[in-house]
Length: 205
Image (cartoon, rainbow, N blue to C red):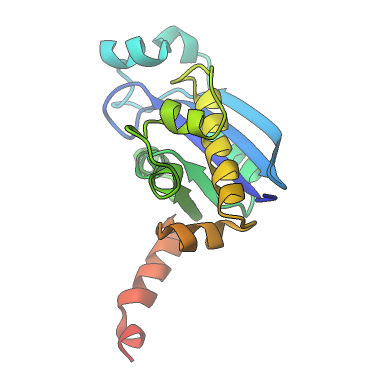
């Protein structure tokens, strides 16, 4: 179905959510991928040590990001790429946490984004033994990609959402969230406003 959104995936240098070292972005218009972007990111001190475990998973080394810009360069690029899109990520709490924590580590304002988790959508759409990204993507007809490559993972995430929207016969991410009973999340000032609206005095009237 002709859904519009931006899919995103991060890789991190270590277990810290503020150690973003790679990001993949995929813009979907009318259910089709129309733009892709991958960027290496130089993690901020003191979150810039690369753990052996993480390097083994994604293959990114300190040398590969040594000449890259830090998050202060990449955040404006993310905002320009995504525009007013809802973001989509697999296990989205992790990726949204990376945006928030890496921004905070550099003293940057956490940006406004609404987001939908493709992992949760997959759980309400398919009947699988596992809902890990490669398995859920295969159910959506997207397979043979390089898992833990940020751009490939973002494309896989996008494929899940496009396929799920078609399966549920809807063309809007808000409706997809509603029909699958998956909560749309938010980060940044919009999250604070949403929380106040849900829990403030007016919400009780």
